[in-house]
Amino acid sequence: MIKRVPTTPFADQKPGTSGLRKKVKVFQTANYLENFIQAVFDVIDDKQGASLIIGGDGRYFNRQAIQIAAKMAAANGFGRVVIGRAGLLSTPAASHIIRTQKALGGLILSASHNPGGPDEDFGIKYNTANGGPAPEGITDAIFHRSRGLDHYLTLDAPDIDLDRLGDQSLAGMTVSIIDPVAAYADLMESLFDFNAMRRLRDHGFCMTFDAMSAVTGPYAVEIFHRRLGFPASSVVNGEPLEDFGGHHPDPNLVHAHLLYERMMQPDAPDFGAASDGDGDRNLIIGRGRFVTPSDSLAILAANLHLAPGYASGLKGVARSMPTSAAVDRVAEALGIACYETPTGWKFFGSLLDAGRVTLCGEESAGAGSDHVREKDGVWAVLAWLNILAKRDLSVDGIVRDHWARFGRNYYARHDYEGVATADADALMTKLRASLATLPGRSVGALTVARADDFAYVDPVDGATSDRQGVRILFEGGSRLVFRLSGTGTVGATLRVYIEAYEPPTGRLDREVHDALAELILGAETLADIRKATGKSAPDVIT
Ligand code: G1P
Ligand code: ZN
Image (cartoon, rainbow, N blue to C red; front, side):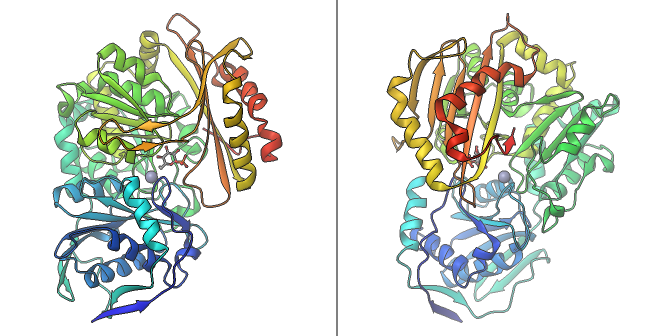
């Protein structure tokens, strides 16, 4: 029976860079999740009889949230919901299923790489029929609708069985529980040369994949172990846990440091990789060589044609503004377009849909292609394996070869977390006010060529996004970028992106910190970070 439940609006349901992300305790507040879902359903048209995909990264509250979402979908007139068994779907797999099932859209339950558990984070976002995150027009409408809600619709019905494959009925709506892995693994097999990778394995190549006790475990076991034949022990932390074993499922050098330390040993496997909570990020480390995400994107751009799914070359590439310009140089050499977009995967969607780009990536460990409309961690790992299988070089060899051709973009991101929102806003306001005075100013041996607040006009639909972060561009290709995070759940996070370009003829083997020292000092001088944040050093450096 359909129930109309009276409710009052919450003021804070504005979706950020990747959906609505809050503490679990907030989502457990009476009507909180229900209000958001109703706001989503109210702004999307053509629900009657349509299909909706629902899946999550398995974190604490995932199962309860799915029960709530499924009942509300039935009460709001959907004809069918498709749910990954045990409530699991990696974000890229959800994107794929939305596309192949011709669904109206999907609800993805995840707080990505944020920690999970009763006192940690939860999140929800709506993806549209193209499989990608809803564009700003829709997320703004959802927020607007959430402010005016006075009821939501749900069902008085027993819970569905999330662990039984096949169809069930929920008040006339079909609920299909599907294997979360199979279709995705088939897609990967259609894009990459699995035989070449098996031969690599036969020649003694060893890999290790850290699933960080998050959603990619089952995907990794199926693909790396069952289909490619690597030993089962190649997948570590392969079982999804509600609290990710108490860790941050964030594949970077801080949270995946055990993998990093292992890979720096002389007897390390040839290749190490990891993915995050919901499976869209990737970390790539060769023996003795960490590959920065920005370099990884550039290397994929230069080599992806070695994979069968990309044999005809790339139509174009796109990177988020803070991502290093390494990929720009590859695009230039290939004679293809390179787009610079604001942070967040949703900006790539229209370029991918319009067929303008094949490959996209972000400095925050995200890369992906036009096979889905999300970044894709396991895809990036397979792309690297495919390249390694086709080139007679180690990871380190491929990276050095790349720098020797294109030069090296030394790169780091400094995060100042939990800063008082007013203080972070004040820092950005001051920086913005100083933009006109910056050109010509020197930072060590570097001279500012240009400074602006990044604004973007989507070349496909003309949508504009301004105030996307302060860029300070130096002569010779080095850069400083300042922006505030759109995904944090406590206070504000200031991100400072530091990039120093060294041409192929320059010094390619410096320590990153040394190569960036001058710019790091410059960032402090230009933005008074210590004074503004009250912090003497960044909380996280990646
Ligand atoms: C961060 C990353 C961004 C990524 C987003 C979602 O957003 O910087 O590249 O798209 O997470 O994974 P931010 O917190 O910086 O807004
Ligand atoms: Zn993620």
